[in-house]
Length: 202
Length: 384
Ligand SMILES: Cc1ncc(COP(=O)(O)O)c(C=O)c1O
Ligand code: FES
Image 1: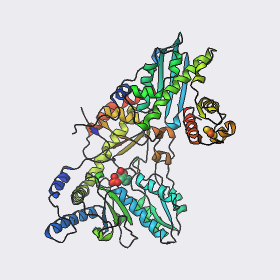
Image 2: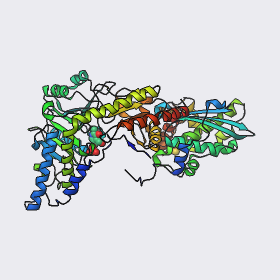
Image 3: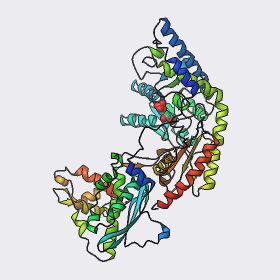
Image 4: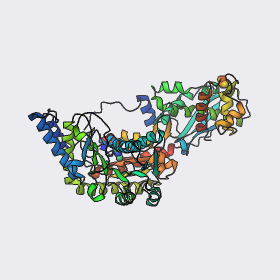
């Protein structure tokens, strides 16, 4: 009928992780997490839960669940393998680019599917630190200035979104005054805001 | 590995008799517009095909305008009325629906962006046009009403006859994109009173890149592609002889087999529907179960995402499609389901099974064996 000359839609590594996802959560296991991160939203078609166990400041074990497309499944599976054994600090800084690279690349329009896993992992680490009354030194270190004129970081914006203090761009503008000087950051911040709203389901 | 092709609404395999006719047609290299013998031979074959297509849709052969497919036919119709409006017609409103094929949806967006007035008539939760709402929208300023015959995604068939009557009563013309209905259910322009109809050969076992806009006598027309005098000046461009002959052959088969196909497709579709409902908990069958294209079954599987289902099925050799698209930077739910008022989560996890003449009941059994564990697995993996 066909000799199927074409490759599968995604890379061999994506296919492998999609077919055999690693470290997925299984009810029968009785996995007791030290930290849990929930990100994403149903309305957007993807939702993610990452659960971690921590030992000596390192990720000892990880389990995850996702409602998502093949890229989301494969990225989270790859992330879960990469995160095991990392210090919390390194795990916190696992970049989606590194996951995509390990997967042998994802089509451009699929990149966003791979960012949810690392946000989930960060949320799980935040949760672990918070539950244990530990300081969270990482959240700060990944901050990047997104509006130079007003010295606003992505972390600040993320917190405003997460805590629902800024639910619209107008509110964000009111609070931070971003974009009101040179204005060059406006488009990027609007994009970041949309992405964050998606991730935190607001 | 076993392969089960259940994506016949996307496109169909070419029928072996159509392939034969096209192989022969390759020899008719004359330009059908030339007056010499070779040209006349090609023209003769093209006229034969025209008759076959006209016969299939219950229209006079003079109504047939060959196009590159249904997308061009749909675009042409909207362009005719755009021109009428540009020329100052008092009828300056178009009415269509939100569940049309993208070749209409995108045309609507394009025209609206340029200030044209286009209303979308709402559909009910099975995808049927709400005639009460249509009635409200119809008035003396409506130029065109365009409603598809059967929906490509959920299969819902529209009450075209009633729509034609209502639109004609206010003096509006009616177009129907019948691309998905041809060869599956009876379609007669004459009986329905349609003014324009679009179709595409690759949906009924003919070649890709060829279709028809059928235009009733005496209704407005304007060419979309300007150039030579082919098609009596209605569509320029050297005839695609091979494809047209192939479409003619496909039309004859479609006409001959339509009744049998309708029965066979519906039987397989119903077997699959019943099997899914029986074997998989918590599924939602989309569309209208009474007015439905016989080979189309659209199902939502809550807590399982569409693309993942599609790709797991693909790894088992089963080819289907999903109404949701994980593209363009965000996961997009099916616009057809959303427009029908279906819940957003259900619109993210819909799978379309579309049967064709080469499917068998064995295929249904194979799907019923492979699908349940896939859904179970995805649901276990779901964060919901
Ligand atoms: C309802 C409908 N209209 C139009 C088209 C477009 O047809 P074509 O591929 O010939 O442009 C399709 C198929 O994709 C369809 O299903
Ligand atoms: S960088 Fe934000 S206003 Fe200039």
